[in-house]
Amino acid sequence: MIKTISELESFITKNWNTINNYIDAKGSDYTFPLYNSVDIRESENKIAPVDNNIYPAGFNNLCLLDLDAVGNFLEKFIMQSFPQTKSIGILIESHTKNKFYLDNIAYLQKSIRDAGYDNVSIVSFDDNLFENEDKLELETASHFTLDVYKASINDQLIFADDTPIDFLIMNNDQSEKIDIDFNAVKTPIHPSPNAGWYKRSKSKHFVYYKDVLEDFCKHFEIDPTLLQANFELVTDIDFSSKEGLDKIAQAVDRVKPENENGKVFIKGDQGTYGMGISVVSSGEEVISFNRKSRNKMDIGKNKIKFSSVIVQEGIDTVIKYDNMPAEVTIYLVAGKSAGGFMRANSQKGAQENLNSKGMVFKKFCISEIRQNQDHKAKEALYSIVGRLSSLASAIEINELNN
Image (cartoon, rainbow, N blue to C red; front, side, top):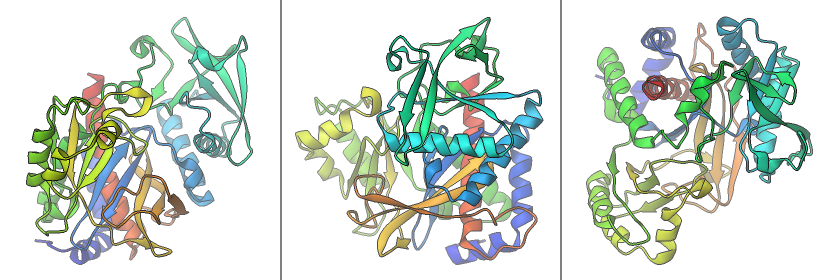
C-alpha cells in the first residue's frame, strides 16, 4: 500500500503509461469536458484538487508551448467529433470591463487559430453589451483588440452576425443562467451549457471525485487520503440572518485537520473567481462572524446568493514561488493535461485562500509531460491528479445532461 507522497510520486513516474491508460479506459464511456482547469494544493502529506472549473479563464497565464498544446488538443477533439467544422465561436462572459478576462479570451482565440482554424469569432448573447450595433470592439489588458459579435439563433443554429457557427466553445460559467434553451440548439456546444453554476455544485463534483478516487486507489493500492481533501456540504444557510451558522460551525469542527493549526475553507457551493470563500480555524470563528464577514459569504458573482456551502479541509501548501506561498492549476483539454501555472500571493499565508487580492501568476509549462515518455518530474503527479478530477467532471456532466 502506497502511504506517502514520496512513494506516490515514485510510483506515478515509474508507471506513467499504465496509469494514463487506466484513466483513458475509465473515461471511455463518457465525454470529457472540452476543457477544464483544476486547482491543486500540495502539503507534506497529501496532494489534492480543491476546485474544478469547467469553463476556465486564465489561458493568458499559460506559456506559449502550453497554448500550442491547448490548440492542438482542441483541434484533435473537434476533428474527431465534428470534422466538418470550419467556423468556431467562443461564447464569453458579460463582464467585459475585466481586461484580464479579455486577455484570456484573446489567447484562447490565438491558440485555436494557430491550430489551423482561421474563422474564430468571439460572441455574446447579451443584448446589453451592444448599442444598436452587431459588433463591439474591446481592448484587453495586453492591448489586443477583440471584436465581439452579437450572437443569434436562426433555425436552431447559432450565428455570429450573419455567419453561421459550426462549433461553439463555452467560456461563460453561467453563474447567471443565459435565457436560452440550449437543448433545442443544433450547433454543437462544448463544454455542455448544462454544467453552468446555475445547475452545478462544487460538493457534487467532489462526491464524483471521491468515487473515481476510490476505484483508482483500490486498483493501484494507494491510500486515498493522499489525494483528497475531506469535505461536507451544509445546506439551508442564510448569512444575512445568521441562519445555519451553527451547522457550518459543527461541520468545520468535524472537517478540521487534526493538527492544532489546521485551517478549514468555507466556500459557496456554486460559483468561482475566488468569491464566497472564508478560511477559519474553528467552528467558534463561524459563530462569531461579523456583518462584513457574513456579507462576504452571502453574495457571489452575478449576485448569486449562497444558500449552501462546502466545508473543505484546508491543505497547507508547501509550494513556494519567490518566497510566496503558491498553488498549482492544471489545464486539461478532453481530459488530457495541456498546461498550467502557479498562483502565488505575497499577502497570504500557506493555509489561506491564494485566489484573492495580491495574487500573481508564474507560467508553469508542462508541455513536455506527455504520454509514452519517461517522467521523473513533479508535474507528472499534478497531471494525474488533474486527470482524475477531469474524469469526475466527465461523469458529472453526463448526469447534468440527463
